[in-house]
Amino acid sequence: MRIPLIAGNWKMFKTKAEAKAFAEEFKKLYKDTDVQAAICAPFTDLALLKECFDGTSIKVGAQNVHFADEGAYTGEISVAMLEEIGVDFCIVGHSERREYFAETDETVNLKLRKLFEGPIRPILCVGESLEQRDAGKAFDVVKAQLEADLDQIGAADIARLVIAYEPIWAIGTGRTATPEQAEEMCAFIRDTLIGLYDEDTADQVIIQYGGSVKPANATEIMNMDEIDGALVGGASLKAGDFMEIIDF
Ligand code: 13P
Image 1 (tube, rainbow, N blue to C red):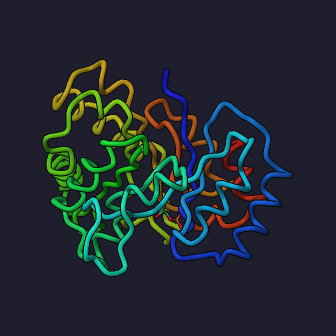
Image 2: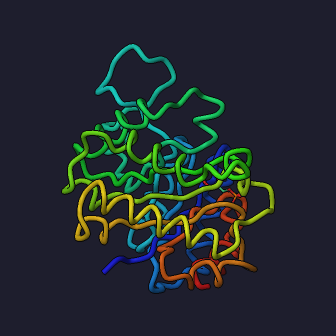
């Protein structure tokens, strides 16, 4: 049985003081539901959030990691550094990192493989651009991303994977994919996993939708059969909005 995961992606928002104010408000509003809640925050907020959410079921995630154990990689953060903080999840391959920070399927694959050596669960982001969708290539693009990103990763690890389908044209644009479009791609992702692995393994993978999810559309998205959760950008920055989404 898959437990849905609704994760906030704060992107480059919230200083430590702002994160603390959010956490205090969110803890007051928070009630356990049938979904797992998580916040993926900037590195500088992670330790504080782990401490604030201690004793609750709220999980904490990072938004990126480096694939080397350690080394001369100025500005980077290792898996061991995240593990020491006790981080539960780590986003890998977000389209903003692919677009602005030269993330490739190859580096995404290396990051996933490094994360799978330890307990942190990766949230792998895939999704097509508007140009690719309009050209009828959305499914081919997502399939190619999955094949490359999951190269040499075994079924035992895949069962711990979270995949976020985030059409680039729906991120931060207010233009949400229709529930049917999101459902269709999430089903296609699971079929692709069945092809790459097997039905049992594919069945365990949480497949989220991300892109302009907000309180007003969370229910129709979360009620789709093939969608196991959401990756929420802008609407996760306000404790009240994020709680409304979790309690859809
Ligand atoms: P928005 O919810 O702001 O569209 O962002 C989506 C996203 O990129 C989550 O990772």
